Amino acid sequence: MVHERTVLSQQSQHRSDEILDGDIDEVLQAKVPTVIWGLPIDGEPVSGTDLERTSVQWQEYCMQYIGFAPEEGALKGSRLQVKAIIEHISHVHITPDTPHLTVVQYARAVALLLLGGTMCPDSSGNLVSLLYLAKLEDIVAARNYSWGSAVLAFLYRELCNASEKGKAAIGGALQLIWAWSRIIPLCPGLGAPRVHMGQHPIDNNRVLPGAPYGAM
Image (cartoon, rainbow, N blue to C red; front, side, top):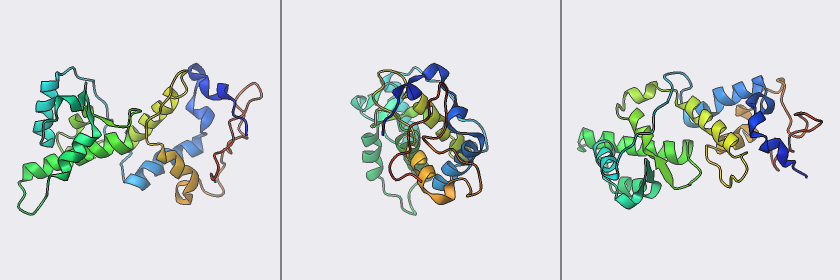
């Protein structure tokens, strides 16, 4: 099977509706993040600004909201090593007598690990953005955000960035694409129109590459 690199490398001309038509895009957005992780697609947008903090300020911020101050070597700007979070939560034991503050900090740490490590991982593979903590400060209000849309938007951005020349890694929840391609309940109905990879023309008589082995 021959892949034509120019189909994926034309970043300036990339448009999502050239790759996914309206029906499929709607199914992917409405079903996959919700069915797999139970994430809402309705609610407040997940957005923010990269704050300029020193390592000491990030350590204090982590201590306040997730219950521990990571070592300076575990921080890279506004990102924290995944293993530092895993190490911390592995030593926290929640019991009926655990103080409420500790429980909430533990919940934030687990949510941060899931968001930055599984749902919106960057291309580093071992760092989690601490910016998500801003949306988890009020742990009750966190349910009001459209996390499903944020996960999908993050994935789309990573797919676009991956088409740039010289890009060697990709982030985002790539398992969503795998699930959409292979899990029947997440796919469009049998009677719905569907784009078949390798049969969808782009321009200049070019088509998308063939589907990966094992795809439906």
